[in-house]
Length: 392
Image (cartoon, rainbow, N blue to C red):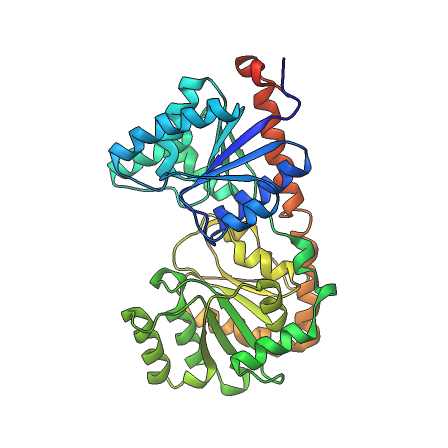
């Protein structure tokens, strides 16, 4: 007899603060709301508390390990958990645990979903093979059309079923109607940015691939009258050579007063509301434009690099419909031009563009849409003839 409440186990290396981790929590929350039984397996992290707070169960296993011996042992451990909790479906979200999960799913004859959250490798051959565990399940979910195309190019013969489900954003949390002046004022005060200054927020980890150098070079090209204050938010480590170099570069180019380096932000909606424009000028094509979607959800114009998943998240076809700017990756001149245009628009023009952005992302990248589509995948697999004994 089919169980009244199907049990779904999500597996992810760690539960820290990334997009895949947040999506794991979001889907677990949706499962609880539907009356299903969600389990999450990881090596731990600060998001474990969020999993437990919604009434889901977290199980700690070393699924983050790339050690072949640990991977083999994890197959046995996962099979034990599947039997113990009568798991109906597995959903793996990273290539690190994917081989263990794949073997466990096959031996227990239960459906396997894999989500590809990150970049699809171009090489070397060993890395391509290692990552192929993510396309060997029953359904592969790509987090953007760009990611889906890359998967089809790299693994044309292995995919059984590939679908695109865009990463979801909690639109209610970013709703500009909920903008709290206390929160926005607090951020500006912490960052030492006056209310008269245009503030550009760039939430990104400290990495050469994110485009920090390009932003600093763009600031140096701008007339001071059009130069915003840029806040780099990403937990900067001044013992890190790259962090030191960025700070020195801002000094050398004469824009140190226009740059702020701040710690990791927990209140992203408040930070976006404190800003006038959001930046995501990554040098490498990224799987999905999360920062751009969150910025537009907050009613703020965005500037992104014109490649990867970001192309799906920002409109810049013409002035009447634009929600932001898509610039040539790594081109400080086009970035400077976009910043100058944003400054010239004034607060009213940026508000109008920001509202267009909100209207654009709301029906396409909502949390509800992502969770609903994901649960539809689960239902289709549980009702399939191959796995009929696990049907809801």
